[in-house]
Image (cartoon, rainbow, N blue to C red; front, top):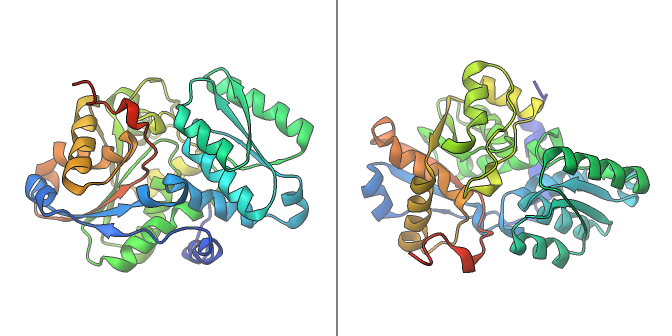
Length: 317
């Protein structure tokens, strides 16, 4: 298992503090009634670059020795990590190159360009992304900052739950979405250290439930689904994130596409918060499994708000 201590997480919090928001924790009486639970939403949709990813990217970029930093950084990402790494590199004044699939959401490609990174497009497969990134690195000698399977990134993402636990005590559980597992593994590490009695759950779409299958089989299985409205959760777990999740997480629960859309709409309408579909998956899990969480104090990570408002799922309903 990746060796990330609470001291590493606190050091990450200090390192990234000048460059990220300490996002608010919000609640909704209406959603509490609907879920029959007391919910505390950690609003990473209000984070810089629009998602929690800026935390891990910033920690990784600012942890680099100067010689490595001068050669720049590179990654492959379909969205939020791409924008986060671009902004983190901009803040340090170093070059960044992002390999993106050619079907990436336009608003996320625009964010990467806005923050000054170079984009290299490729076919929308993991093999193509990795091969293209390898070519970029061979030419530039840039340091690869993996979207999630990196201890520095995990420690940065862990600061989300570090803040949540500092602000809200006596949580019965925390639910975070899971794609590659950087956020969920980091959440589990912080919660275990700061609030050992609090259980941590992962939330995932039914149609791409490789994390749930991996968790219950004890074997790291690749992602097989390639279509979900929660496009940020289509990646496979990494070996580092899986090891932490397997040991520290209570369970991974899944929901349908329609349940994700319904939860997303509830957040928009009842809380007046713009969240992307991936961010709505934890609330969808809470609502689907309401008996399991009834009467509890539940922390939910709203992971991001980078959504194309021209294509919200209920726009033409």
